Image: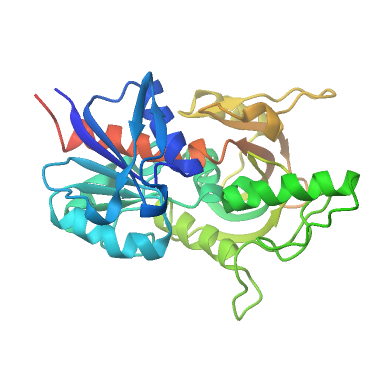
Length: 340
């Protein structure tokens, strides 16, 4: 016996990926509905071998449905997620709206699956920021062994993290470099993204950090351990899909790089590709379409007493969004919404 599942925002990058992953992982679905705004009404999306026509979110009745994946912005989520939750449908939300609500669990199943039972307070579960999700998957097994004190992270985030508009802007600007007749000024990003890097993701805060950087700090503390100190610099790079992160980790106890490599190899959701030779590491283009978080360049940091450096790469549309949401639903089904 399966579930009645709704995907809200089914025509967007993340919504489409949710449908793909639900089919790929053979999530037990008895009935599925694809919802979108009225401007996308009637658009077709794929679910395995089926083709679904989108329905109007504003007119949809969530009563009797089990799980709703929300892949729309915070404003629309604020309007419709409480309605879905109040009807008895469990909302798994990909926006930032509920991530910092103490009554809403923020879940990465490889890290804090037990927290999923907190869903019952509001019938809502939050999906973390894409850059946070892959980082905490890498940190968790190391933290269990040697207790992390501080993390310094620099991210190299793809344009798909900014949605279809970000991907279109990179594509059009790249073409314009070779066809100067048509200039494509920045709209989605603050500066030209093609052949460039931009040290700003989201808006600036009073202390000089960006909201994306603040999210990584706050979410890591909520998901993994509130005692961990995190400082982040988040950078947008001209890559279509796949986020990369350079991590410097300081531990309370010494952790040898070889032991760290072995620990990560055994950890759920992680693939270690770490050869000390040309090309013996994973880059964003190689992780696209994969479920794993890839770890490379594991090495001791000799400048501090107990430190390691590593390189972390993941498909942000998958582990950073759609895959993590489906994994949350799987945990929810195993622990709370058992069928049959």
